[in-house]
Length: 196
Image (cartoon, rainbow, N blue to C red; front, side):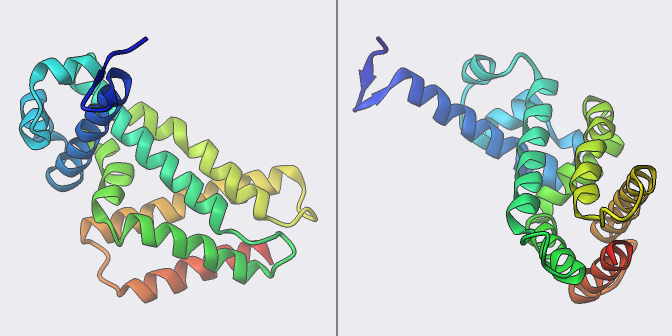
């Protein structure tokens, strides 16, 4: 049985400290990039001591991976929650998915930087970023018409994820200078055309 302090159990306090560390990691990785994330910087940002850092994470890499996994999970769930029934028109499904992704990744650019830009520069995330692509391709593949043969659905899904990843990476990195509305419209058109 864990002891209670000020009405909060040890387990709850540990979980709250872990959340503080993850929030600090998101802020640092999402605004300053990989170089901004060190154990000391995370402790300073979270206002917790290194003792509490090591209570939750073995090292910096484990924290960075946890931040990435947290954001990736939010992105996956946002896409799942956003897409209406498969009976809806391809354009409506595409618009719902793209809008949900933009709201998460562009409206909070820290999350976009963590999910799409950090794996380019942080060795701890490079392999994980590549490993995550098939799960996003699977989400896209599920929305494609069943009249396509299985190989065509797979090729189309992987190609779309690659195209969308590059579009969002360029947008977040500042190389693609278009409005948020134009970005959404273009992504919707890509997905809708593939699904029609």
